[in-house]
Image (cartoon, rainbow, N blue to C red; front, side, top):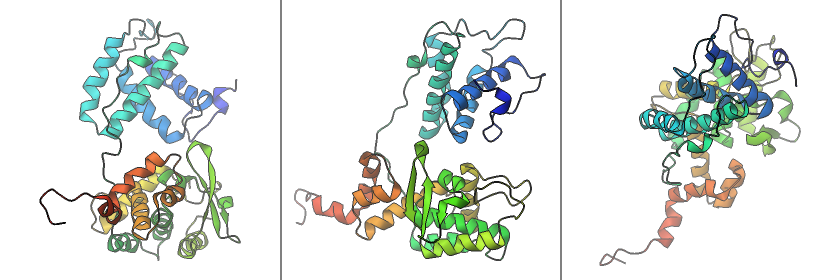
Length: 319
């Protein structure tokens, strides 16, 4: 197995200080397990480690005694979830239980607990397709794009990212992972590095290509050493993360007076626009690169014209 000092994923495995306690050492080993053994993405690892840290607080002992997890039982796991999850959003609660199952699997694999407890983690109540995706109107999208100062370095970068989100429906992480080699200027296509290390090609609209070109020519720092397209403006010019891309959307929305908006709202907007233009759900799923039609099915609820054709008349009402 590789030496931990040689394994680096966005700084997730930087060596810990000798002064750090047993809990942080345990979290370091857990991060390494997620990176090396499970191949988990950087943003997911950060979320898992945050949840794991909360769970381990008060459950690990001093250096002299050891981890102190031998007495951990199913009741302790359930009590943590019941205390933690009700105050979280559904998405955050789901992340908490996924992280807890992952951590407990790791602890059992390492022999730190004497029984598999991952199955003791309760599930978060969820009703699939219960939500209604909220897109933006054309005027709101125009306001979002118009909030970027095209005369500034930051504005040119932010506009290019917003165009990819608003025109192609990319996820924030996909925008962050876009590399220079992923843009095929001659063919007018880009390679999208999606979930599960899937690489898929999408057509590059002219206006999106123009925004990216403006940023590359008069925005992207010349001293950038990495190959990712979008980087921090201030040195060191590190690659942006998915969270960083979503933060840019939120800041642009505030400037445009649109309230709280994050990157996924633009993905919903693309789907809604496609449906209004007459695209089928299958075509929407292809553009958004969904693995399952069940994921795309939620957009059937925003296709009001199609729903009217199958709606039954209210008894006693006008036919």
